[in-house]
Image 1: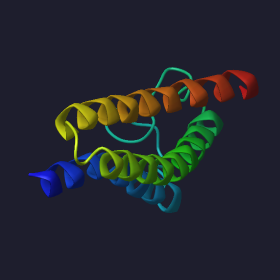
Image 2: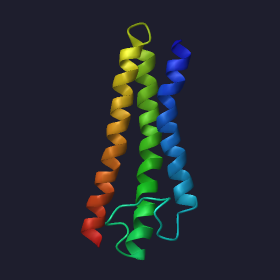
Image 3: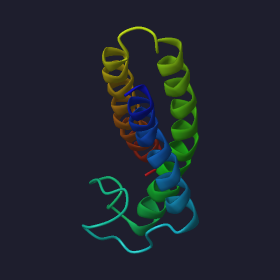
Image 4: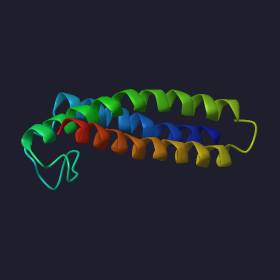
Length: 113
């Protein structure tokens, strides 16, 4: 059970990091409603769109790796305790970090465009 919880807890930040790498290497070029970093600010111009794709990708690449490491350490440290509760807290922090990345991209977009 511990191994399953450990893998599932690490899956989210690793997925975020890999998604950031894919977004960085193959950014969505055309504004659309289906893929990419899509907000009102990012879709105001092609320049804002391109910037948002790259900026968000950079945040996700870095943060995904850092969050994966922190999550792994937290799960390993508390493995003898109630790791289900620890996993819920870790996943909550992961979700908050992903939401914070949107806030950071929007702040940067508002400063530049």
